Image (cartoon, rainbow, N blue to C red):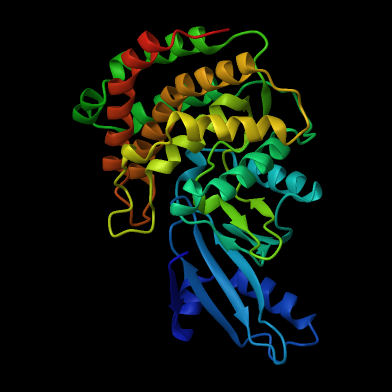
Length: 349
């Protein structure tokens, strides 16, 4: 379940910007079942690590409350992604019926439709039924007809984030994280993993459990939050999802990762089989094995991406999360797994 913190009435003006409050009052004024548009309850949702997210409730007699979400953008996160691109993706995905509607925008955030579904928990990702539903929805997401060139964004993103991290870090931090070696590591990975015939799709690129919602009645899955979305190899997106199974962001130590929870080969195979099967596609044993092999290699890119994300976030984001220790764990996994993965599973084109 998502951890929540109810914000007192006195705090509302401090936590919710005036622009956002005007949008909220305007929305609620149009709802005939809301007696007082200003009589709202604000609940902060915990677990977000890029933005602050608030659930806004208006009490309604005779039916469930009226609800919306307010998302306040994190400080300095424009170094990590282009906000205009994220808004564009949000609106396009919404038009495809794949996510919440945009209800309003203000200077440092937006108001979104509230989806009446629950956010998944870390444990849900290991549930075979739920995992199969996620696999099917991810295939649907990858196949969205999005405008623009289908250019892989992963490698440029890595180089840009490395440059940004170098500009923010002390010499001691740069030495600790082996920044002098990372340019070559990125170049090597790109050469080894960039192959003709790879499946490229519109990827979420941050498919942790907090970005997946499920309607308990219909079992419908909704993927939310598109800050990092863009075209990439689908194997990278699935690899990133598997890596997220090591995390539980709702503990007392949300930055601590447990890679004993990384899915075993059978779990990974079932996910890939459902991913392919969901579109009615014929699947061969050779293709399944090839994708599984590719996914394992792309876990290395995922560790680099989120390691750099952690370092940058430590220097620009004030959210209470130990970004630097998180980064250490991701880089540790990269160096630990790199040689073993390429020795045991030579990349298959």
